[in-house]
Image (cartoon, rainbow, N blue to C red; front, side, top):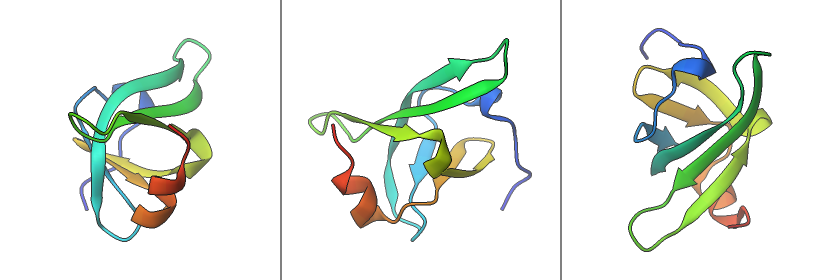
Length: 82
């Protein structure tokens, strides 16, 4: 794993990886208040026809340059409401 980075540097298009190692999508939007350093979560695009899924901040694990790791496995990610 690369060195961890802060949520504030996450950019649209970064890979999102489930706890079991499966790539589940790409960052579509980072939600939060950078001024107050409050991270709410991410919108994750599941592909061209998959729509996007909101992942709350408590389900986001390690963040490294270019990749966001979730604490959910791929099955749990799929069950999140669109």
